[in-house]
Image (cartoon, rainbow, N blue to C red; front, side, top):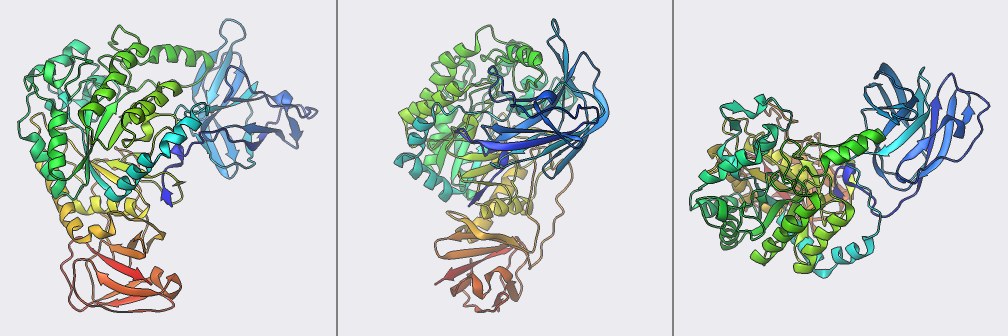
Length: 625
């Protein structure tokens, strides 16, 4: 069983489930009779609920209807006329989930005919089960409609390409690649590009102090400072990394115990770190370096016995991807009363071409170039799928498969077409959030992905191991990021952390590589949870660990109990009592000591005579008959 955020547990084919809504509304007419729910043709994935289509049940209005797709939805109230934001608190209850908040996000629609105001709850609703639900709303404000609209992150897959995609995804080549992915377990993510020279600073101004809104991670320099395309291009003229960068990074990844490396071949800024025939905006044609950095790192990783993947921003390209259709989509969405996601699109200095021509002339061709350049490529890590449509997402997936069916594609290609999922940036999912696909968490060693010269908020080795072990116990992979500077050098603090994790893996790697989650994930402690890149903030990691806390992984007839506390003379693991199965052998990884142990009705008790130094804990290998 594997675990991940339910946000990404999307039904690709149509799923029907029933939702009962009861709206408490004191001024409603009690004589209203039950009618059909409206599902408008222009927006077949919306549900429109009107007072006259409901029946009155005491103080409530009630509807019965079907939703075809699961996922995130927003709830909206539509009022006739033009109104200010509804700043009084409105209560809504969906099943057992109560929301009480003002409706401050408003749009005016139908301005020229019959104006209406659409107000939206901030909290999203995740409908993931096919069962009946109830919604009740208490309000003194009259309304014309209630709307249930898919959240912008809830990409609805029509099923048009499902059969063809499933055949590719289930092919022997893909399944073998997914087996490799599970075996690998731990990889290095690299965010590196022109922005690395700036280190999060533009003209002596730190990115956090930019006058424009936007992410404060260093690789978003062009967007957050809203730099023109010509101004940003100037960085290419001085991009000339050290010739040994590839060998140095590959050696670091090897020392860190990582099994694969994924680097930004093209981030949102549109600059390619490889020799591209489709765009002169690349490291060979536009910089004094004049060499293909991706091919160099690919070769260096293969020499170290590491596998290789590339990140590619297919949806966002601030140099050649115009505004990503964002202004057109915002105009349309404003007229409909729904949110338009503008982050990541170049609306301050868009290229003069069309979004579609960007795909045809740059994005698709560059994916073909990367596949031809690296025949042993393991995966393509797509990103920035915001305004891509279903056909375009599927075309990226099929292009990869048709060229090399053994190359994995991540979920951010869009519309559920990925071979594996990711929980989100620095996101560690809860044990309650389940998905069948294999998954990974990508994480940072400090607070930024790209090099930020002044970010010294490093996660220490114990913190990284805490996240890593928790992810492994849930069946996931950990893709841990470094941000080299413009010279290609990895910050010393980051490199030291990775090497210390590598030292731990030299001893305890058997509990990680190729493992899956066991029937019990942990005991004696709360699970590790992390929520996006900025969740940790500036606070330091102050978690302590006791000898009663364990995480579990499994492999064939073995279970591994992993602790982050120093080893003690007596180890007591409650989850491995007699009813867990008959144990054949017990040993401490990294030790040859023949242990004394016994299974009781309550636990597995282990006596250790020769205590080993264990700065970052230890792992017990338990073999069952």
